[in-house]
Length: 335
Image 1 (cartoon, rainbow, N blue to C red):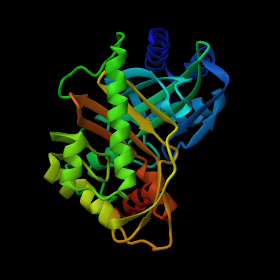
Image 2 (cartoon, rainbow, N blue to C red; image 1 turned 90 degrees about the vertical axis):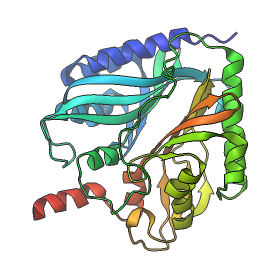
Image 3 (cartoon, one colour; image 1 turned 180 degrees about the vertical axis):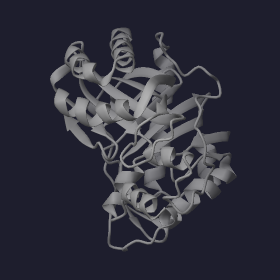
Image 4 (cartoon, rainbow, N blue to C red; image 1 turned 45 degrees about the vertical axis):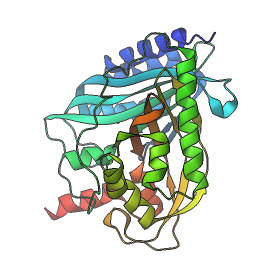
């Protein structure tokens, strides 16, 4: 019987030390918990990092410098083996918000000296009691929208904070029923295979097969959230599929589940080409962008009830020649 309680314990202790230490101690903490070849895949502008020095100085130093008294407000926590490698590797996942006082500019985003919430999702692979690989998705565009920085012309869904599960049971600190995790993973994969097989064209009849009638799609910065079948098609799937041309599904790094929760991420998951004005921008039609995407799911019975989606829009738009951080800097200079 699968038991990942030790892996959960390692990650909880690691995160506790990271959260409660200043930036000077981060290298020591990373050395304690990670392997010599530890690497991270992070959203733009952090991107791919390897080794203690890079991860400490290029990921955690900017975060710790800009946001003080960081408090991790975790909404989902679970562990599972990876379907991609036939369940040989063990991964721990957590998602939520980092609450902090925004005291110093962050990649050109002006500080406010007020509390802010940074929406994040993390994935950590454990081997021989060491963290060997990880991914850190931080929705910087959502932060910019919360600060009312007009760097994207429009969002088709609700712009706001994405809360945890409606059921308030997303923290799987204790061991979960293995069969329930298998049901969740099977449902996720059935839904994904159907979507890809139908060339990413969404209809209500499709949604009814896998999604709860009161489905909630907690979308990323630049898109926003949608609720119910009709609203999901109007607020996300319709504009997404109308304005982007599907080029290639490049797969996932991780696919796992535990209990009623599961998810995946890719690097990238998709390659897409703009057809029209995705997110309100005008593009060169020959450009192809990479979509690095996180999907976490909550299963209710035999249907998906909630879906949390982080898209590295800063990277995707960068591939297409649009630098949102630079756009923000220029707007600040004009003001």
